[in-house]
Structure formats: C-alpha cells, structure tokens
Figure 1 (cartoon, rainbow, N blue to C red):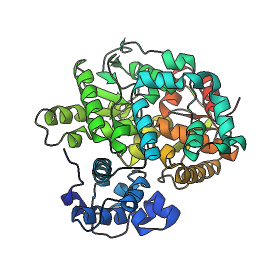
Figure 2: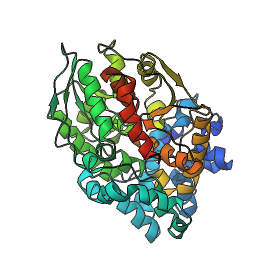
Figure 3: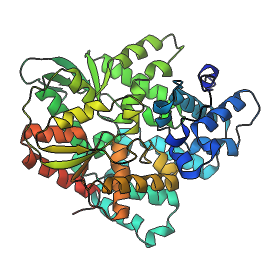
Figure 4: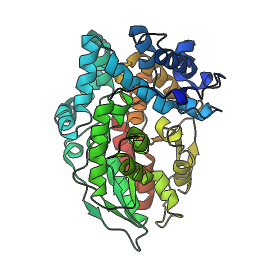
Length: 440
C-alpha cells in the first residue's frame, strides 16, 4: 500500500508560526524548511506534484526529530505526528538512499526491534562497554565515521545479568486486587534497563495490581514507525496486539515514552484495515504509561519512605507532547517525603534522542544533548529522572562530554526505592545510574 500524509491533516495548518520557536531544528538553524510549518509546506507541495521527493526534500524530513513539541504549541490542533510518520513512509517507498545510509539504517532496524538479535549484538558491551564509550570520546576515536562514534558514545550500560534476566510471568498484587495489568518489557528496555522493568512490576504489585508479563511479546514497532518503515511497524504491532490479547488484562502498562506513544496510535496505524482496525483501537484504549496507571488507581497504598535529594525531571517528548503526560510523573515523585523536584530551563525542548535520530543525525543530536545537559547542570541536581530509555542514554552521553557525573534513572525506580526503604534502597540504584554516565 502506498503511503502519503493526509491532505485533510495538512490543510488544518494555518501557517501561523507558533510552532517555529518550539522546533529544535528551527532553533538550531533558523531555516523555514526545517520548521514544522516549512515541512508542512513541503508535504503539501509533494502531494500536489509541485516538488519531487528528491535528496533536498528528504534532507528536511531526515532532520526532523519528530519530538511533537509543535503539537503542544499549535493553536489549530494540527496532528504533526501522523503527518511526519506518513511522510517518512512515503520517502522510504519512493526514494532510494545512498548505499551507506541505506545499509546503516537497515542494520539498525534489523537488530534493534528484535531482542534476540540485540542480545547477541550487546554481548560485547557487557565486557567492553565502558572502554567503547571512552574510545569514542578520545582523540583516537576520531578515526571512526561520525555515526560509528555516536553509536559507541551512546552504548547502553549492559551486564550479563541484564541481558539474560527475565521477569516472572505473573506477580501477585499486595492485598486486595485493584487491577489486572500486563507490562511491555520492550526491546532495548529489557536488555539494557532490566532494573526499570523490575521496579515497574514491584511498584504495580505494591499498589494492588496483579501483573502479567507475556512471554511471547516483542518490540511494539515504535522505532520502525518513526523511521518510516511502516510495513515493519505494522508487522510488529500485530504481534504485540496478539500477545497481549491472549493474557486478557484491563490495562497494558508501558514505561518507555516512545513505545507508549506508538501503541496508543495503533488505531491510526491500522485505519481502514478491516481485519485489524477494531482490534488495534481496542488495544490502544487500554494502554497506559506506568505513571498514568498509578495516578489512575486513585491514591497510593504502599508507604513512601523519605528520600532527601534534588531531582531534575526531564520531560521525554513522546510522554509530554505525544501523550500529554506531564503532571502524573511529577505527582508520583512529589509524594515522596524529602524529595525536591525541579524542572530545567527549556524543559520542553528535545534532548536529541528521538528514536534512532541520535544515531543517524549525530551532529544536531549532540548539539541538542549538550544544550539539555547544560540546562540540567544549572539546576545542581543530585539525580535526574526521565521516562524514556533513549533520553537516559542521550543525556548520559551529553553529560560525559561535558564532564558531569550524574545518576540518570526512570521515575519509577525512585518510587520503588522509596517503597522499599528510601535512601538506602536508592543508593544501589544511583550507583548503577552513575555507571551509565561514566562514574565509577
């Protein structure tokens, strides 16, 4: 099926320009065609046959992070997410990239969405990950191509335990059952951030949820969708829907912002498909971010122990702009006695992670990462919290480049530590978090 952005969605844009100051690439370069308004002009021109889908056209859409900050800023309600996703799908179907670019993107999307393949690829990182990141940052590392250096600099902090650990298929609720839920373990998340998944299950159970972890689940398709590989995204989404339908739960819980945003859009992904449209919409209606679910439960059951720390909360773009979830993570953290929660300047601006963006567009990603790290540093944090694995890796890499030694964790890990004993439980988490930023 040929893909193209919706003319009806394009026509909702009134070209007011409110999106311009919110766009990271317009902020970097000041170019109209590298703003949401400019890109929508290009989409319209391509649909009308006035411009070709050539290298110049593709360059402007490759430069877009898909952060959706423009969606939050838009007074006309333009849904930029489906527009950029369909435009990228159109590009992948109609434009032939250069061999090196095609190969690099193909390798990434052959490995990352498939946990068994990624496990093999990550095995060397369990032993040499720290050395790989150090080499990428050294003068000697400059002999490597820019994308290879970026990949090594962003290498996640994996261990043999994280690569091979498994969550129990069923965890009983503490006390009276409030909900029966299932948890998405993710692809990179389950391998590099197994601790986040474990904390998610513990907190949900402590708050009265029976937690199911489907053993046959895989990638949700978010990375493929955001990269324009829409057929691959649909294939992965079908498998995800089937895996969770089989366990019969009330809610599907996600702790990675990009995954949750994509899963809530399955209805759009399968629009017009008579076999999958209704199933996709029903599935998406049950998807909740873990912070969203805990607030939805209507009050905490487990006692929170004090944690005296100054925590900078970073809004992951696909959580705040993609899903509109801003208050829930903050509310959970503010329940913890002694915790001081702050937001950095330019909190709404993307850190530069954006799926595989920091791998395929390393230069602007590094500029945005450095800007984000500098703004966080101005807050003198004890700890950084953010709800997306890509943001954790991106901010950690930017922190190393600027010489900062920060522990960067998921908010659910802080909540889990508070339930399990407060500062003593947090100490083990922050030690692991600091390993991801280069501290020993």
